[in-house]
Image (tube, rainbow, N blue to C red; front, side):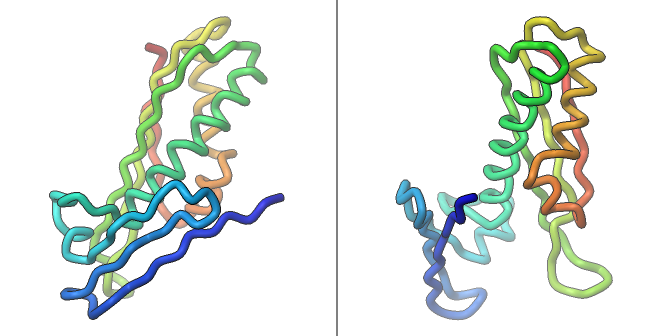
Length: 146
């Protein structure tokens, strides 16, 4: 199986520094990162590890769900998946941690009722490789047919 690579170049300290994340394997882009923007409500045009995790999780989940829908006997027409990844204080160890992930999916699916879609959605939450990697974070799911 392939290995994918990203690289970050960082200059300066935590509060006054900044960096650039390069998606090295795909070469699709380089994105600015900064801790003050990471910890702010407004991202201010820069990305963060949490946003990159959200992107990875939503994409992985959509792929897994499309496979699970087929296993349930359905045909996915379209899936809209969002992942909200929250950063918060780590009360036990200090610093910060991911405090939760909310996956929301709306699907247009032929051949499955709401119960079948829910089974496929829950199985995708458990079976997606990114979900498996993030087992230390509470992941909640809001799944419904559109």
